Amino acid sequence: MLFDLALGGHHGGYIQHLVEYADRQAFAGVIDIVVLPQFCEIHQDTVAAISSYQHPAINLVPISTAEAAALGDRHSGMNRALRNLREWQLFCKYAKKLQTTHALIMYLDTCELPLAVGMQSPCPFSGIYFRPTFHYDLFANYQPNRKQRLQQWRERITLGRILHHPQLQTLFCLDPFAVKAIEHDRSNVQIVHLADPVQPYPSIQLDLATFRTKLGIEKHRRVFLLFGALDGRKGIYQLLEAIALLPPERCQNICLLLVGKTNATERANIRSKITVLCQIAPIQLVECDEFIPEHDVSSYFQLADVVLALYQQHVGMSGILLLAAAAGKPVLSSDYGLMGELVRRYQLGLAVDSTDPSAIARALSGCLLELPETLGDRSQMQVFAEQNSIDRYTSTIFQYLNPDANHFLPVSIRDKI
Image (cartoon, rainbow, N blue to C red; front, top):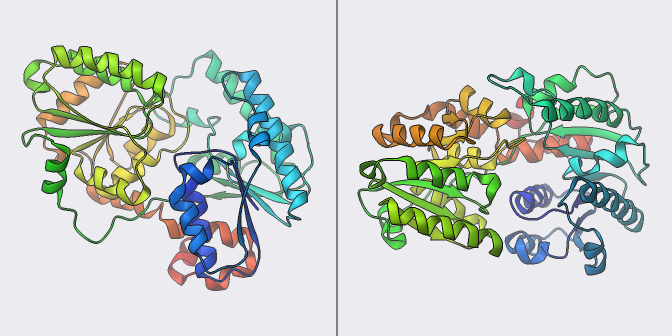
């Protein structure tokens, strides 16, 4: 059973890659995929792909609308804790109902509380761990505040208890630096670094000039891409403040390309600030306020001169870094945590304090004064993207969840795991 009660972002792709791999390799078993009912609407590409596979034992199992409504929201710490407990109850319910022999919890972070207090599962399970911070002291320029120190301490205690849960088989972690730190803990759980899969770009060369014309981007402008659902955590407000600090001659060379669906409340706030900005700064603004299908995502990254990843103290990996690296495009990124460390180590672009509009403004000026080709190291970007290939992601999971399946791994992949 694949269990994932989250939506948007990578969630559809993570599931689709595993199902495609299972179908290609004629996986000798049943795969039940337990998701929210909205999954079928939001991840139509994934649902369509699943329905087209020849493997007869791959089943999409949406929970009921009533069960989804009863989960509650995540708007406060208490609400998140209650929702996590309810998700665990649903996990156990469906594992029993589907007679699951092994489960992969696609977002193990939501199960930390029930696992730490020793709640039992109907079956053995493994999980993907997304958001560790306990090891961030290892990163350059990391200066945690009191709240972050407390969070790190809480994580160490909680993770120690989780790793001794008798039914946990494999902990997959997207953060390679966290894996090294976790390995010091004495437990029987396998700790495995998991690639964060990035879709390879199509071999057919995109006609960028035609695409620019279609979007109405002026020829002299440099394209700064902000991709994904726009909200405060993406740093959109700090970015707009930073642009307002730039002199007019810099702004005349900026095209801000905003691509992604935004909820109505956030859209109204962003729109009001953009309206004010455009009155004082001669930038060009191009908006695509819609959900972008997976097969169209690469076009926007190939078009960009600089990709913006100005998350506000984001924890964990970022698919934006991977998509930019696969396209060979530099990022202007937050310098916080794992994102900042990856940008520095792989020379993916510029890493700045994304909470400070003046620091962002200085970096934007640098991006405008330098040629985009001189920002970052293209060979290192390629290495970073290749280390997070879809093949590495899928083969790693199938190897550790089904050791007998190692015979169908390509030799080149098997040797690298």
